Image (cartoon, rainbow, N blue to C red):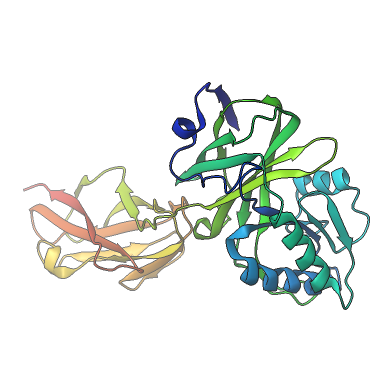
Length: 359
């Protein structure tokens, strides 16, 4: 991760931009409450706690920020365990609200306990506001956050955390859960000893191609080191623009041949888009000369009927195929590969391959 800190000695109005809400009173600014959920796919009662959190999410909407850390299961990673150790989590489920209120297990009044604590924390103003922006290019997330004090108080011994989350993960867990939301994927932190003026933080993450880029969010929060209180939190949906794109390339596009003998062109087929899709490959007669020229698409074991359909994940490629052209006349013979993504067949690309037969 690349990060840099820019400490700008600017007044709040100029530095934080129009997106930051105005303080409602001199005691601070509205708080976005952070709810940290420690869970596991093998935990029997974790789905109960998570379902309660989901209900509260629909009630409190954008006034809460939910992050789920999975422990010792398929969604676990070092950051989840470190966060659990920081809070001294010893049993699951454990829900921690704004770093200061810890609830372990579930009972009949769990919903009311969570709700009352969330309401209490929302009622407490924060001394800082956060504004931010995020973009996604390929597998790189670039972010910028501004931490903006709204009071004269000096904040010391605090840390900021940046978390990439993924929603709508379909997975059949041992405890019966099949849909998983707010799953933490990456955690980065750093300490800031003093905040007196606007602090700007920017950097980037490289993310896994296995994550669904359409369902990613970024969470940012500030935590006091000793008390563990969350001073303020913030989250953004990471914008995603679907790119459907494939490319077929050949090392040679012009080869010499003989009438009636097949000439082979090794090709590479690559998904250069950002989502998984099927490429449709054809060799239409209307784009061949002469039109009765022999055309095949094969790999090392088989030849395939046209059009060929091949599924590829983003960034994946296949180098096992070749196009076979059997020339019929002296001079120039050619065939044209046409290919489209299955999700949008109006996108059509072409590659022409030539076989020259000496006269």
